[in-house]
Length: 150
Figure 1 (cartoon, rainbow, N blue to C red):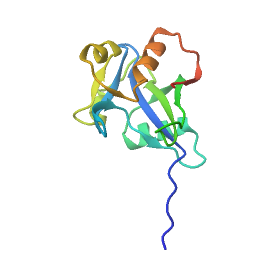
Figure 2 (cartoon, helix red, strand yellow; figure 1 turned 90 degrees about the vertical axis):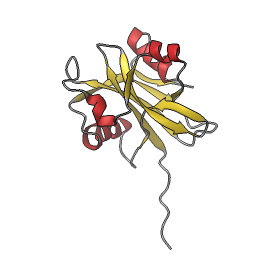
Figure 3 (tube, rainbow, N blue to C red; figure 1 turned 135 degrees about the vertical axis):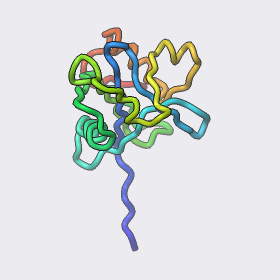
Figure 4 (cartoon, rainbow, N blue to C red; figure 1 turned 180 degrees about the vertical axis):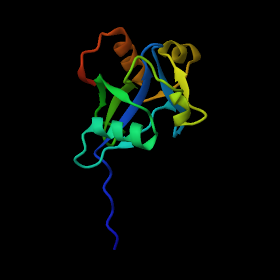
């Protein structure tokens, strides 16, 4: 009888950001309750730190060039309908700006958004607290470290 593989205890939601333009990259997603824009959900391997998971996915699986992980990390605890902890990790360019159009690495439908554009268009985002996290990061009122997104 084959062994079942346990579900990951945590996932990382890496968000590619453009600091200069105060925008971030989202892809269309089909969710059980309709259309939305989202970021990937990458399973954290047993014993792997969540920041390393984000770098592994962004550098090795998507081909993103040199990046820097922001010191602010959003945490969505495993409560209610959420089966596992989700870490929202912000990744920007290692230099002042991305040296190439990184949007193409995430598919033809990926799009740069600002939080104002999302609100003006009435667009649904998953996770739904992502725009608030981004506003706090851009405006500098979030402390470094893990921030609860409940």
